View 1: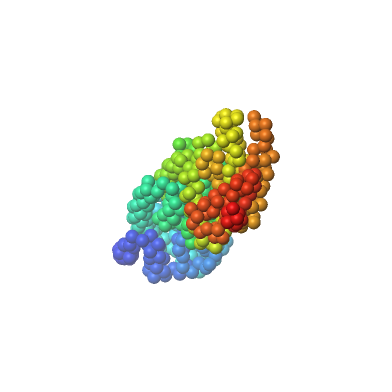
View 2: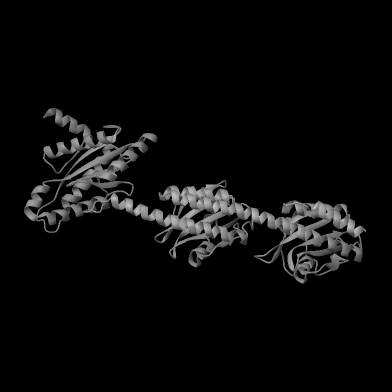
Length: 495
């Protein structure tokens, strides 16, 4: 009758669909029905074949740090042989390695569902011969009931999780097909994945040439890296994921150098390769502040997300290339006037927002019509190409060179004062004058007009007009020279 009563009460008590709650109730029944005040439940990690502590009563703080390989100790042996293992004197039993086993007697019962081991119930007592045959049989029957309740709750939770993941995959697919701008795509999908999949942080790392570049971050942890930075040191697991095209997990990041850890508090991570048409594009990396956080069950839905994401990134690259072609000058290969007008508006807005200065240099090749008449249009075109190349080579990466039309070029110089811009323009003028253009027996020179925002103008059209007026005055006063907008106005007043 006692067995029937215990099993009936257990079935009623364990009727919950929350796995953690099932484990808590198991320990409550162990304590209240069986009067055992020192017990632990360890679950089997199928990836490492280790027993990992999950819930306990009376086992102390050291319990949480234990990981027991299958076949080791009474608990590991019970899981391996799939039957209860009992020791009446755990102190002197060489098999008893579980740190909490400081009682006289220890009983380890495998939690079984069919022939599958899901974990081990470990019970201890200070009383000698506390676990007689009837008690062991009753605890074994109870453990079978508890195992089924736990597995049912875990399967239910897994189905709920899969439904949530499916919704997340659909959300990522919708976002990926609606956003074509690369930077917006990376940030929106990164944030969406971090929200929909269990993790504390997410980042997107793209392969750009031989470099790995951090392009997007989302989450609650403190990042060790900034967006846009080139990763000079990466974990071996990331290299493996990129080279193999398969998902790789890091269960314990604390042993890695700080530069290889995405976030300060990250203790585990999972790296999902982004592959399109057999070409590795980069990695989607999720991080957690908990060790051993990412399970094998996360792999399949994350692979689906990565496939969708990689295809969207590839499409965004195509769109970006098409846009670049639309903004490039066909003759010189540098940016055209359409790009200049868009970019100049952005730079003016940025200088206004951050209270910085922006200079513009308007460049014109002197006597270009005469050069075309003397040497032909083919040579004239080559001169324009070489001028464009020289201008690009002599400027900073943050500066922008555009062909404005004909033989005119415009150079954008962010965070550059009028005085600094004049020095830059003079360097360009001198370099062009000294360059030996093949097929042209005399020097090719340029005239340059410089204007600064907000000193000379505050809008795009006003700034270009101010620089153009300065250029006009430079040409009118002898060519092959550089003039600022202020002096241009004075020269025009004196004419």
